[in-house]
Image (tube, rainbow, N blue to C red; front, top):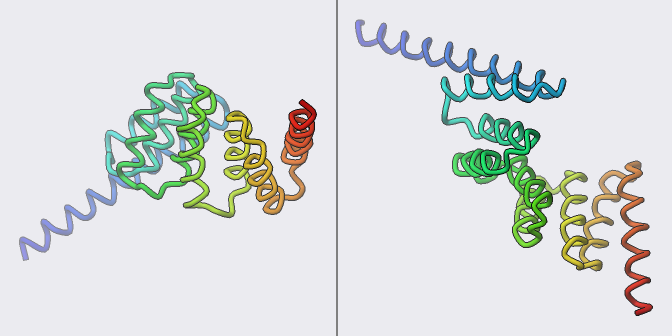
Length: 176
């Protein structure tokens, strides 16, 4: 009976910590959406202090650091998220955006392709792959992934604009 009581207390404590950490992450998300990145970072830190085994918490903290332009902290947190859950497409996408900003096409393409692998129906991920290839001067692959993005979300005007840019550059390069 005593062991059952101890087990029940342990389960309730774990559940309570889980709920509190989830509450911190909800607050962090609200602050992030309101562009209060410093406040969001504080809430992410509180959640992680209570629950350091949830990949999405590290991914969120990485996103906050990305917005604060603290690339080394963003990189560390996104990699930590992936060490906890290799299939977390949002963390791969975060890395791809970080590498895009740093103009590291090779790592950016690899991270973008991983995001697409784990979430193949995400048009934005396809679009970032296309941007990565474009920045790497691979217009054919840029057009390929741009077509996939448009197929997934034909209403997105940015995807169509990118396509016209890619086609213009392709024609310009052929004329040289």
